[in-house]
Length: 225
Image (cartoon, rainbow, N blue to C red; front, side, top):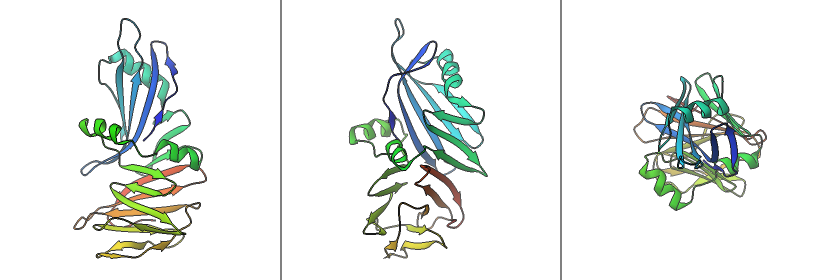
């Protein structure tokens, strides 16, 4: 969910000032990756916005605020490679109906998905594009389910829903049937987080590989490692 703030020449005709990369989720369509690119003003054209939505079925690029079809074409030429999105060092792909986001390192992963500031969240909420994922050294927020890393264990501040974690074996409940059970976790090694709303038959799964800075997301009918 974060931002590539350096001014970058995308291709003749557009200059990208900032890229916001966010993981999104919708109940009926599942996970997607949304990229919002702020294009710099270029007289006589004012600043404008291009938005891209990545799902396993394809990549849709839209001309949003004051952008036009030429902006979309230039954006596609720079950032779309076949069935992949490449934003700087971040590559977004799909395999077996699972979205993979690779950044290259744990530090880069945290920088890409660091929590937005409250003022930025207000803007995103107004556009109905709140992020589904935030990662920090202290834990992970997936769809509002907050996994907290402390003293070699994963716990949560949530009081409702179902939460579990997998590391090396089968899923283990962190929050289930109203009971909180902190689970040992080494956040330097690969792990998978699982969440579900009470009464739902859908589980959301997030696999994190810290060494390669990669997250993989998908939905299932039960927690899947």
